[in-house]
Image 1 (cartoon, rainbow, N blue to C red):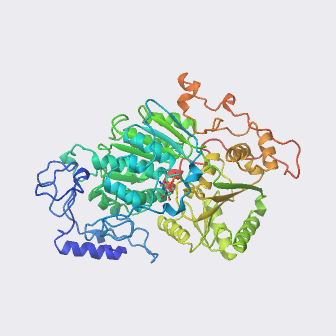
Image 2: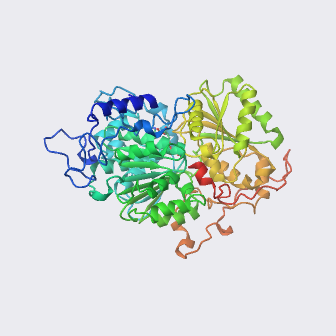
Length: 613
Ligand SMILES: Nc1ncnc2c1ncn2[C@@H]1O[C@H](COP(=O)(O)OP(=O)(O)OP(=O)(O)O)[C@@H](O)[C@H]1O
């Protein structure tokens, strides 16, 4: 298996030297994993069955030997940020790389005796679930209750998933019944598999019309998974590759900041599921190297983020103004841990007769994440952080492998805090939009491996990233939006494990007081008396985006205003009455209210998209 860019080039050259015939021909998904037959394969997508697939090549073009020509070097000997993203296929041999790293020859997977890394399913026992929509398909209790196919089931066992998580129990049967879905479930509760399994299974079993012959150099994926950040797209691709291993379903990723030529070559080799960030996808669409006309499945991960002010025009452009089949023809799945109602309303444009699913209290992973809020003045934040880190080190809290993720507001702030931490004996690295993509990927690797156990990040790392052993999330600077807080703290306490989140709060965060204390109460966390007083005073500050009630993710179609065509889903009448804030105060900081207005979407400027994407 090539381990570096140079190896890849050498392997490709060898392949080319030997006539390029050792690369396997593309076989459409529904014909893969069958016994070899003397009949030639029928092309599902590859256009007319006669002569469109060159021998030993792929379905779109003749074998190529130009891997070395992009002129892109992995740069500075950092181990190469790009070398591992080969779409799951060994360029030299045309064999699918085993994403599990286990014995590739093994055909049988032992039944799983031990659950995935000790996932605590008891934590999910009492989770309330709400569904709405017409004829909602019933949930399942086990993976065996669903017909996902042998190859996918084998991979589920390889992943050591014993039982479906609650969102999977509901979402998978809904999607397998070809229903559109808007699903809201807590951070770290397995949403990725919930949308990947039905897509992979659907592609394995589906019959798809052939592609137009004039589209031979244009990749026509059957499924599109969009996510807001490059790192999240990379992660989804890695997960999807595991789930799709040896199913014959090919997964490719395309994201900004990485050389496009390499991604183009991957696309030319065939793609069933394209995982992408919006900006890079638009680029590929404009170059006519990708067409969406065959899309059967569209999944938006972090869907509320994808449809907020920063991304919405781009998503509308991709979904509504290109050649993607309309709702009802394609199947659309929207997933997030948070779903403000105004975003639900926007999202409904993309859906047909959909099921709304809310699993648990939207936002927080119930009691799995212990949330602490500490009153810290701006000037004291660094020393306070240092105290926390020293205490953590001294107590050996969270064990040796424990990682700490520190969120700050600005890119400059991230760099300077990283520098300061390193100078004070705490190895740290940073991830933010001003770093090159290679630096970002390198930082993430260094953090995950524990080499630099502290990662200072902006919101670019707030959503979706599934990093094992993040024991502590520190909100050094609180965000202006409670949903961003929810996603940030959700980097810990994942898959049934516990975690700790500490937030530094001061007058600048007054607009967050009310939603923060409500969220903490919902998650059975202790709300400090001083914070409750801030919240009480802030009765007119900030909107209650959750609309009150146990389920923050209630289906907006249930609101009266929806049927009346109203647009103000967050009028005062919808606000929950809150709870009795303690009067008078012991040591409460005096609350000045000079906080920036934390209105919806306020944290994203229009220029943000390219930096993220
Ligand atoms: N059925 C399962 N059994 C055991 N582990 C699982 C199962 N499903 C998912 N996981 C694991 O749970 C972790 C969290 O899953 P995932 O990243 O999909 O969460 P998420 O809901 O998408 O979170 P976020 O809202 O932060 O994006 C992953 O490490 C995943 O491998």
